[in-house]
Image (cartoon, rainbow, N blue to C red):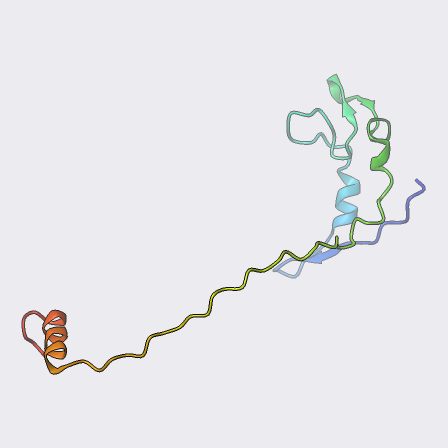
Length: 113
Protein backbone atom coordinates (compact mmCIF):
# COMPACT_ATOMS: atom_id res chain seq x y z
CA UNK A 1 0.00 0.00 0.00
CA UNK A 2 1.24 3.48 -0.82
CA UNK A 3 -0.67 5.06 2.05
CA UNK A 4 0.96 6.43 5.14
CA UNK A 5 1.37 3.96 7.96
CA UNK A 6 -1.69 4.12 10.17
CA UNK A 7 -1.25 5.59 13.60
CA UNK A 8 -2.09 3.15 16.40
CA UNK A 9 -5.42 3.89 17.98
CA UNK A 10 -5.30 2.51 21.52
CA UNK A 11 -8.27 3.19 23.77
CA UNK A 12 -8.71 2.41 27.44
CA UNK A 13 -12.02 0.96 28.64
CA UNK A 14 -13.79 1.93 31.85
CA UNK A 15 -12.32 -1.19 33.48
CA UNK A 16 -8.79 -0.22 32.42
CA UNK A 17 -8.33 -2.67 29.55
CA UNK A 18 -6.52 -1.36 26.47
CA UNK A 19 -8.06 -1.96 23.05
CA UNK A 20 -5.93 -1.48 19.92
CA UNK A 21 -8.52 -0.44 17.34
CA UNK A 22 -6.06 -0.54 14.41
CA UNK A 23 -5.23 -4.17 15.18
CA UNK A 24 -8.90 -5.03 15.65
CA UNK A 25 -9.84 -3.47 12.30
CA UNK A 26 -7.02 -5.24 10.43
CA UNK A 27 -7.95 -8.61 11.97
CA UNK A 28 -11.58 -8.30 10.85
CA UNK A 29 -11.37 -6.54 7.50
CA UNK A 30 -12.19 -9.74 5.55
CA UNK A 31 -15.19 -10.54 7.76
CA UNK A 32 -18.56 -10.36 6.03
CA UNK A 33 -20.25 -7.07 6.94
CA UNK A 34 -23.73 -7.06 8.43
CA UNK A 35 -26.35 -5.79 6.02
CA UNK A 36 -27.70 -6.44 2.57
CA UNK A 37 -24.86 -4.97 0.47
CA UNK A 38 -22.78 -8.19 0.07
CA UNK A 39 -19.49 -6.60 1.10
CA UNK A 40 -16.86 -7.40 3.69
CA UNK A 41 -15.79 -4.97 6.38
CA UNK A 42 -13.08 -3.60 4.09
CA UNK A 43 -15.55 -2.77 1.29
CA UNK A 44 -14.76 -5.57 -1.19
CA UNK A 45 -17.72 -6.97 -3.19
CA UNK A 46 -18.47 -10.52 -1.99
CA UNK A 47 -20.03 -13.26 -4.10
CA UNK A 48 -21.49 -16.67 -3.23
CA UNK A 49 -19.41 -18.63 -0.74
CA UNK A 50 -17.67 -15.53 0.54
CA UNK A 51 -15.40 -15.18 -2.49
CA UNK A 52 -14.17 -11.66 -3.28
CA UNK A 53 -15.54 -10.63 -6.68
CA UNK A 54 -14.13 -7.11 -6.86
CA UNK A 55 -11.72 -5.29 -4.58
CA UNK A 56 -12.74 -1.95 -3.10
CA UNK A 57 -10.02 -0.19 -5.14
CA UNK A 58 -11.73 -1.42 -8.33
CA UNK A 59 -15.20 -0.40 -7.15
CA UNK A 60 -14.27 3.01 -5.75
CA UNK A 61 -10.87 4.21 -6.99
CA UNK A 62 -11.20 7.48 -5.05
CA UNK A 63 -11.72 5.62 -1.75
CA UNK A 64 -8.03 4.78 -1.50
CA UNK A 65 -6.92 8.41 -1.64
CA UNK A 66 -7.51 10.30 1.58
CA UNK A 67 -8.64 13.84 0.81
CA UNK A 68 -6.57 16.58 2.44
CA UNK A 69 -9.69 18.48 3.51
CA UNK A 70 -11.16 15.63 5.54
CA UNK A 71 -10.23 17.14 8.91
CA UNK A 72 -10.23 20.82 7.97
CA UNK A 73 -13.22 22.88 9.10
CA UNK A 74 -15.31 24.32 6.31
CA UNK A 75 -15.73 28.07 6.52
CA UNK A 76 -19.40 28.93 6.73
CA UNK A 77 -20.61 32.45 6.02
CA UNK A 78 -22.10 33.99 9.12
CA UNK A 79 -25.87 34.24 8.93
CA UNK A 80 -27.24 37.71 9.59
CA UNK A 81 -28.68 37.98 13.06
CA UNK A 82 -31.91 39.87 13.40
CA UNK A 83 -31.81 42.25 16.31
CA UNK A 84 -34.56 41.75 18.83
CA UNK A 85 -36.70 44.68 19.81
CA UNK A 86 -35.76 46.03 23.23
CA UNK A 87 -38.06 44.99 26.03
CA UNK A 88 -39.64 47.97 27.68
CA UNK A 89 -41.45 47.31 30.92
CA UNK A 90 -44.14 49.64 32.07
CA UNK A 91 -43.57 51.03 35.55
CA UNK A 92 -45.60 49.14 38.12
CA UNK A 93 -48.49 51.08 39.60
CA UNK A 94 -49.07 50.71 43.31
CA UNK A 95 -52.11 48.60 44.19
CA UNK A 96 -55.03 50.11 46.01
CA UNK A 97 -56.14 48.47 49.29
CA UNK A 98 -59.21 47.05 47.48
CA UNK A 99 -57.01 45.46 44.77
CA UNK A 100 -54.70 43.97 47.43
CA UNK A 101 -57.69 42.46 49.26
CA UNK A 102 -59.06 41.01 46.00
CA UNK A 103 -55.66 39.42 45.15
CA UNK A 104 -55.39 37.88 48.60
CA UNK A 105 -58.97 36.58 48.38
CA UNK A 106 -58.31 35.12 44.87
CA UNK A 107 -55.15 33.38 46.08
CA UNK A 108 -56.85 31.81 49.12
CA UNK A 109 -60.63 31.62 48.60
CA UNK A 110 -61.17 29.90 52.01
CA UNK A 111 -59.82 32.88 53.88
CA UNK A 112 -56.87 31.00 55.44
CA UNK A 113 -53.69 32.95 55.96
